[in-house]
Length: 167
Image (cartoon, rainbow, N blue to C red):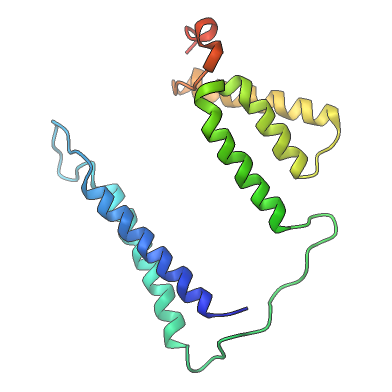
C-alpha cells in the first residue's frame, strides 16, 4: 500500500470541505432572518470536513520521513462467505446511479422492486421467496414511512394519476 495515496485522499477531502463551505455561503437567507441563518449548517459541516482532511494530511506529512512510503498490506483476504470484491461494489454504485436517473420517469413503486432485487442478488440472496418478501416489505416500509407518515412526496411516474391523491 502506498502512503502517498493517503495524502491525496486527505487533499481531496479537504477540497470537498472547501467546496461545501463555499456553496453554503451561496444559500439564500430568505425573508425571515435568525441569528444563525440557513447558511450556518452547510458552512460548519464544510469547515469540519476541511479540518478533518487537513488533520489527516498533516498527520501523514509529519510522519513522512520516519515511516516508509510503501508498507505491506494490512488485514486479511476476503472471507469465503462474504467476498468484498471491487466488481461487486462498482455494480452497486452503477445500479444506484441508474436508479437515480430513472426514478423521476418510472417512479418509486415501479423502479424500486428492480433496485432491491438487484442489490439483494449482488449480496448473495438467491431464494425467490426471500427476494420477494424482502422487496415487498422494503417497498411498503419505505413508501409508508416517507410518503404517508413524513409527507415526502415520492415520484410515482406513470402511476401518479392513479395514486397521486394518497400522499
